[in-house]
Length: 270
Length: 266
Image 1 (cartoon, helix red, strand yellow):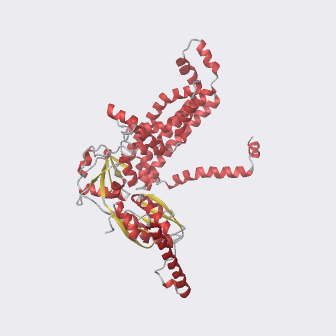
Image 2 (image 1 turned 60 degrees about the horizontal axis):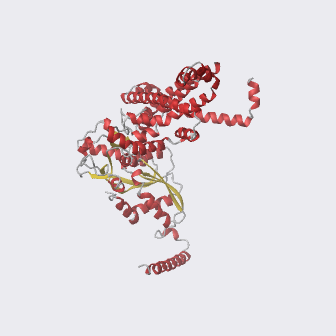
Image 3 (image 1 turned 90 degrees about the horizontal axis):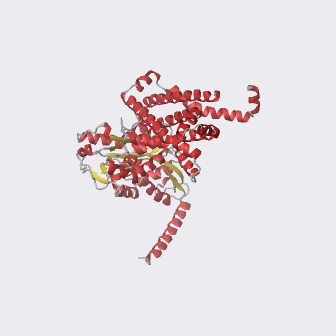
């Protein structure tokens, strides 16, 4: 295995050289009709800012490293936060080339305000999960057990994780007294209330429960009480580098992006 | 007098200074201009706002009292002690003034959360949990605001003529009596200014509070936290609450000016 690796790499190299030479030849022979050939996209360059839901803050940077490797000279800067807050700041003129939201409802106002170039495309979905302190000392096994916790961390209702958590609680018929709930601005901060802070439990996404393994214990929420949120992604109309922005959207939707999202715990878009 | 002053300031500096002044004034003017004046009072009177205002008042006043009890002696030590390590202690006491409050909140979590070295003892021995409690808000506010009192009082103590205290001592007064009846009255105006600064800083505390004590309505949601939460839902409410905080800050400032003018006169 170890011995054959360099040889394989060399072979790939030579294949690449042949392909490049072929491309050059193609380019020479078909001058004037290059625009009609969509199979060979120009390597995307420059830099873009991707505003993304904080639940994507673990998986997107990893994907971006792969993307930047494929597109030499491209850089992606992220602006993670609550989708609700991001949508508000984009409407107010915050610079973003791509917006990846944790809910269709946070993308919709941008679409109707004409701030989205083309269509917004669903690329993943996420469900809710309870997290507790490691070992689950309070014995929380369902949403109804959350009343046993002294402090439950929830996202603010303007964030998709907050809206879906409220929906799930009302589906389960659970009412948490106000004095028991600490509100955090986005899902990562909500999870941190349990992993770093002293909150006994939090309602976060399945993906948070997956990434916090060891720092928190996940307690699945049954399907009939759970609420699934769909993640749309779109290129912004104000983008100065739409080709790179589109390339990133395509990459996220493509096999590499979907595989990374799947291993982070996301489900495919419904 | 006026002509003499203006001739001393070069025009470029004057222009830059004016721009600097505008930078500080314009946002506040914009805040006042954007306020939904018809609903400011009813917004400030809403149960959630009153709850947050009460909590803010209780916590910043408690912070001030704790800061006086512990901060004034700390200032005394820093100003008078000749023990080694005073410079380190002074730096440590000033650090929270320049530390980002969120970092202060994380530091407090590391020490006082149920899993921190001190918090674990408090919780297992006394059953006290500081995080997500009013006590936690006061702790966070004290961490951030007490240095303002310490620094102000220490500077004033440094300016007190040692002869005054020596005279008091030769008249037979002990160090406590001398401090309380001779030194403290002399530094009175600075002490009052330090108190006002500490109280105002505690009132406005956000980062350390939300990091350490969370954001629980009625328990740890102080006015600045309520403003932040309101901003994501209802801009009018956020601006109204901000106007309330602005009014309190102005009142403190006006009170301070009076004190300082008094200090100049004496």
